[in-house]
Image (cartoon, rainbow, N blue to C red; front, side, top):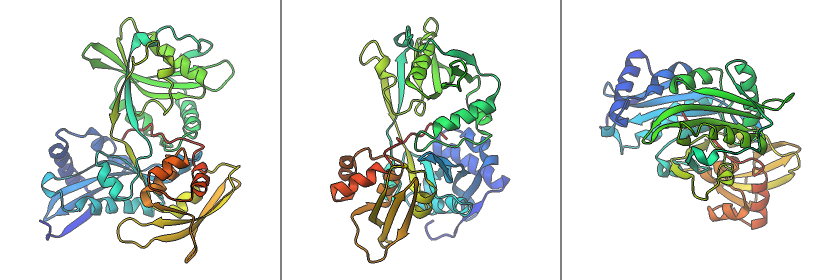
Length: 394
């Protein structure tokens, strides 16, 4: 009941078992990640009148922005009991789940959620569209431009591959700096997952591919979970390799996080429209500490701007006049009480900009960012060097 006492506490084994039972009622199935990820996460539950009515996990995982890892909190497996919804419990639970991660240094938070409207209302941004792709394997057959690569079944030297994956992840805004437990967790999530590396003689791997087999109405299909390519040639070699499975596997599916936001697949198809895209709910980003997030992020060396901003708080908080300074690959965001401002952003728009979600000033203005177009263009240029992409689904 709304008037009853609510507490959010760190979950012991008994409370967590009760929460696992609750996830079945909320999701309609058991959420295995709640069990698998608990040892790596901060686990919190909401308790009212002695009963668990909500909860979730929070993972302390850095994410790459501007080429640097930024301390983040990734929210996993959250839910609220159906009978307790509509009472603004989610916002309280969210705040309490993030609090211990903020105390550990997290300056931003990320989550996959179907509640995008509620997230937007609370200042969370969805900086990129998310799609899975399905294509007939025969469409990839005969792609030969990448034949100079050696294709290695990567059963060893996982540390080297992890280092290379991190190098490639830093080219985008949003990917995890994957922790050491990531490979084992993914292997438990997708038994039988197979890894390949694509190498030119004497060079670091140009491509890293992870795939598994799954059932499909037409028989079997390949499901691509990781597709890391350093160059167009490596991407071509990887697509061509997938096409070699055509004799037994009719379909290749790139799961919702697999392909980077580029026309890699479409540009190689023999028939226009052969690939089918399915839109999914997006990942959402929230900036917990704007000043620290700006300081810790990477910035282009050739950007030199000083720009007065007005950041509008979510809810009833007062707007914050700030000045953004970027020079020589570093930046700071400092208060500027009473100063004029050239651009006005909400918390959601700030997060969208931070992730490189605005590719042009026109896109930012269309999304409601206020300011003179030239000032908005200068702001957008600062984060447009890398595109937003979240390859990890959690």
